[in-house]
Image 1 (tube, rainbow, N blue to C red):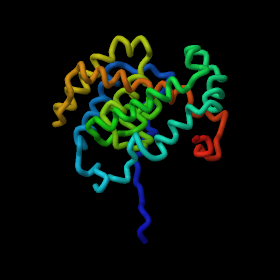
Image 2: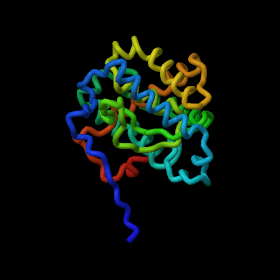
Image 3: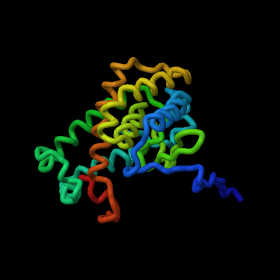
Image 4: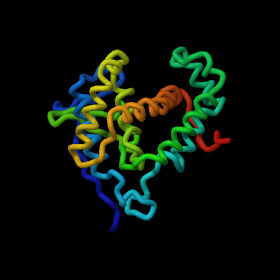
Length: 228
């Protein structure tokens, strides 16, 4: 038959450590993940394979399809109010609690900005709980795959994976490291000032997701029911 067979490496070994929100990430660990992302991004930087008529056209873009629908759903007033009622809601500024449209509008602007940037192949969900480390460095699990700009992965990874104090102290150096590795792997890396601007713009995406993404206390039968 033509049924595919997947042979996967067993990562549940003594040599492998999984990341997560309660495990502070060291600078060298974060740098190893960014090196890996740079290698991935450089390999597919503006590749014809990612064109709508290319062999990887099945990979979802950040700005179309169910991903965009999902981002619209999470800011619907009923969904927003529910997640703000959880303990995480105490950290949300008062001005945003009653007006999720203040986040929806800049997110729309950010998706439009994505369309103007060089596209590459991204992991799509590079947050701290999808990272592991072994003697070779960092690795990624639970791939969602995106046709996206480089900063979609890089920003989500840095902001979700580092303690706030560490992120403030390290993000510029880590971003510079990523850009140097991106260039070393053959992609036309942007200058640091432009890259730092792109990185800061993308923070909003992870901020919204970490407030509204499910934690098991609420399930939607079909998220499309909540799309206006």
